[in-house]
Length: 146
Length: 146
DNA sequence: CCTAATGTCTCTAGTAACTATAGGTTCAAG
DNA sequence: CTTGAACCTATAGTTACTAGAGACATTAGG
Image (cartoon, helix red, strand yellow):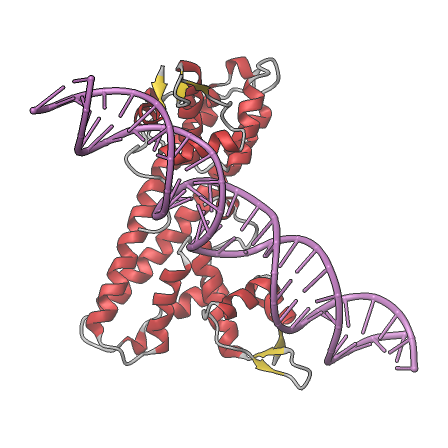
């Protein structure tokens, strides 16, 4: 059995975050030692590793809650799980494309900045102009959960 | 001159968000009509469009504040400008790298989810297993602020 | 065994960046 | 001139944590 600190070290999740996950019901209420300290077994460690990993991949906690409840009913189709992952992938692809465009603008700005004033800087103009922008202005799935 | 609703429609920013941006000083205090309603001109519209796009790209409001300060003071010395731009460029590069790793991970997960039942679905297993993961666990993949 | 350091406990409050609600005012169409 | 949409302020709620205070538990060294 691990204390909360050991569990945090083992999974890379901070101690207050573990307590927070318990509080919102993402982890079960922990067993307690004689001195009222939380104790964790392998099951909870695996569950927390899953949460950690899913969070790193940008899944919001509610999506993770869904995934965890789905995995408790392993006979159902994984279409729903796949859909969540697909949505995340689309959002990520869009972000990469837009960040590449911005990277180019910043690099050009830094180059131009070598000798002059920034009056010529086009970064703000470009970002402010829809015509120069490849973004789809629909809802950004990742924007919510960061 | 646009009302706040028209401005929101023109830029894709919700009305309460515009008022919030004014409140935190990201937008200037708006002109008011005789009936105390906010009125906006082209300058503020451009500024808000810039904020919208920068937010889509994941920049925190404080970074956007920095970027805007460049356009607010176009005579600013190039040294300071260069430092801010370089910092933003580094942030963008880091985000691209992490998003790229994330993209690969999601694609692999989806590839392994062949549409069967959850019992066979690799997505959940992959998410729980660090050994299948190429992500850098030292840092939050999606962390926005550097 | 005692002590000091570290770890853990609960609770509250703070953060970013909004979003929603309540209760009132103004504007534009019919 | 009325009606309904859009606007106003102010407050509170959201997500996913993070930080702090003050008290109890555990562990390593002497």
